[in-house]
Image 1 (cartoon, rainbow, N blue to C red):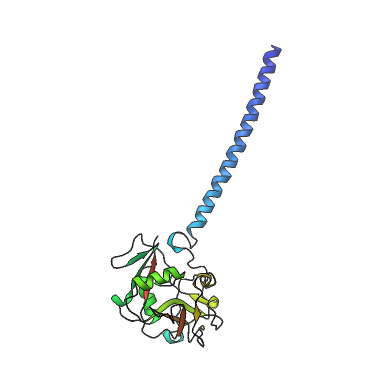
Image 2 (tube, helix red, strand yellow):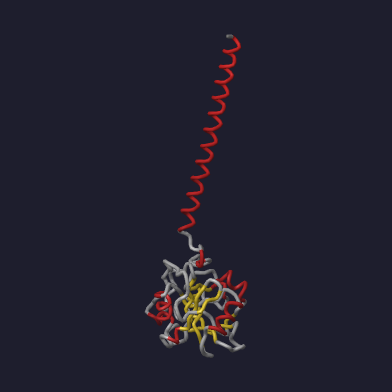
Length: 227
């Protein structure tokens, strides 16, 4: 009888220990599961998932307004990236491109950007020299001036690291790979000269930009990131 009582006491103690271990384990699993949910929910709302890597990370300053295009500035954000390129568009890595001259002719910066927005994209902004060279040779139709996705410099500057973009990508990071410059004597600012132009197949201008009031009719390439 004494042995039985001791055995029952030991069994009961083992049961309590096991129950406590299971409780702690379940609690830990619950915390981990909760953490996963928080991370997933956070990630859904952050630009940078899928084809939007780098987009909307550096907003334009409030004083960036195009004087010659109705005091306008880019505000559009892509809401839904397509899964594949539309007919007539060309694909490079995870992005689609088209020269708007094939459908719209020359446009001012604002009209070109808004047309790109209708396709869930923005005016083309090269992230490195390889991408620019591919677009120049495969998408740009004519040897002429093209608007870049750059819009505004604050403060007034010739330094691309001070520039902002329609995609709100960070020019400080892009410039590390592009190593582009403004033409000597040219600058961008936040009002009268906020746009930059590049010229196709011109070695004097390939990595050098020309300033612009944004209201001139120029060629535009649209860039659409794939989801």
